[in-house]
Image (cartoon, rainbow, N blue to C red; front, side):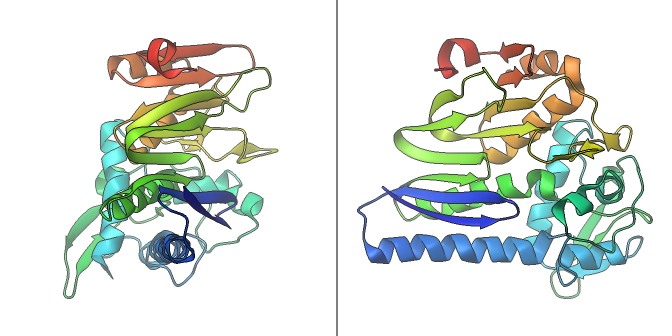
Length: 293
């Protein structure tokens, strides 16, 4: 097996393939990971003034020319909003800044700071003069971080699989596996005394969302679109297995936001999930019987 890694976005990104270890194969994987990370950064980073996202945010309320690559990432985020009834909303850029994320990340931006509710239904996409155009509601700003890493995991996994290799893309805990033989990955609840779960995947995604790693004295990075404030939740982490990393990440984030209602919501959707807190652990669907180690 060959694995290459990259440290960025305050996390570790790892791309692994079941292949004979050769310098050329390692170089190819490393170049793919580096190129795709740089591409996504140029499309969707709120911390780069030259990114397409920053251009859209600076012209909120107006149609802006963008690439179809940007539309692909934005569409994944809008799909997440639709699947969760707006709980996971990409128009919370002002709210996440107001919560203190930019200071925690030590990366100031020009985004306004306002604890604003989500307005994802006001986002528009249409063909443009060259590629596409996007409009977001005036007074809002996009933050695509809730789905972007998982979207990247899916994209990388499919790119490697198309070359005939079994693959695991782990983008900071957003994991996508495409393999013939089971590939063991781990869901870490990050709660003292609660063990990580070993999970065997073949063609599926695993994601863990939580309030532990990206937390500061006044809040955390998971915003409840219904209030524009950091979610009030008993859960330290929520882990979900789904058909893709993007779907798993979307559900896990919604589970955190829903708090005590999360397990019921996950059960109704038939998803394998584990909710973890310092005082309680709840599993849904097949997690206890077939997923947990």
